[in-house]
Image: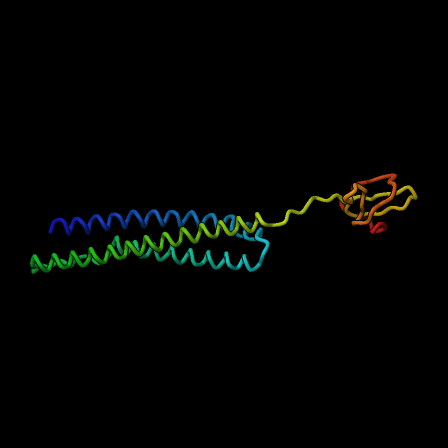
Length: 189
């Protein structure tokens, strides 16, 4: 009988520790999501992928909540009624049933906590992959380019494959002057 009551005590202590850990991690996840989540979500280039990530965040939150609730039920489940009429077998049956209930709740808390952690990992991985797969835009310089004839053209400058200067993708002949600008003047657009 002592083993059964000690097992219930150990299960409840383990559930209390589990609930504290999941609660702390859920708080950290929530803080990160609130502080930096929306700006990082805006970095995801595909709107469908953004909705998938938002859905996964919701699922992770529900799983983490289920883990906490199950852990609390395991840690603080039904207490044994006090009675002057407990027989040894009735008390033993009550302790065994409460131990089984607590173990089932603790298992559920651990599985839902693990599922929440894997979901959160998937969210991070999806975000990382989506940002990594973005095509890198090359920095362009906008400039007013004056050719030998005195014609000024403004726009992003670049080079053809053979090295000739281009403005707005159009090759420019011999160049007399290049003036970098932040925006093209109205007369050169």
